[in-house]
Length: 274
Image 1 (tube, rainbow, N blue to C red):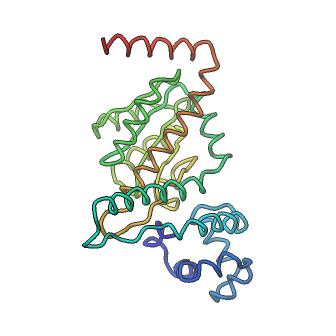
Image 2: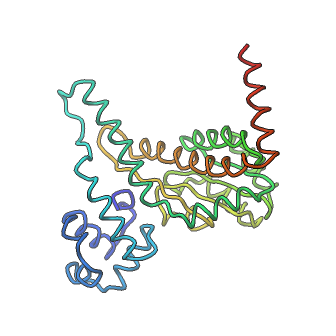
């Protein structure tokens, strides 16, 4: 809710305001009780829950309970007299919070669907610009260790040309913290035109990018004064990519071709270090 708050309007913002101001009380309410407290309809609450990334109010309520138990550990903002070790503790706590919140939103059905798409794809292309290019490069670097044919190039024009050459048998992973980056959306439109299955990694499940993609993984982070939310979100996005790589890699490692590839990569890396 905090990550999506700036994009909420009207009744959605009223619901979020109530929940953020009364987290313990809100987590114990039924959908009817919450609607009555905010003075909106149950249908409005149901739509709000889906817009911030949940399939149902029940799922949201259970997930909210897990997050609520974690909120006591949310770090306060840095004080002027904080010692270096205190600042570092707060930074690490921010990363942990981002990972905990992101993990609570990862759904097994989405993970299984992504694994199936990736393992059966002719190629897997990564797209991301600015800070998101770090995540895209990391994904490309990791998937080179699998039998999946991975592709990535940091240049904007080359990424667009890459998108033009993909088709329905390929898969694309697009990373954008805001889900509104102009270049990323331009690539997404080209991919959609070519009927390429798309997986989005973004902090905003209601963003233009998320709406264009087949599967959406949400990275969650709270903004604080001393750094932008995108910094913690980056850690969450890297971990989502790492999770996909591990799931796909573990599945491929059980095959003869996957085992042979891993041995060849290890041998090549050992030779380069001599």
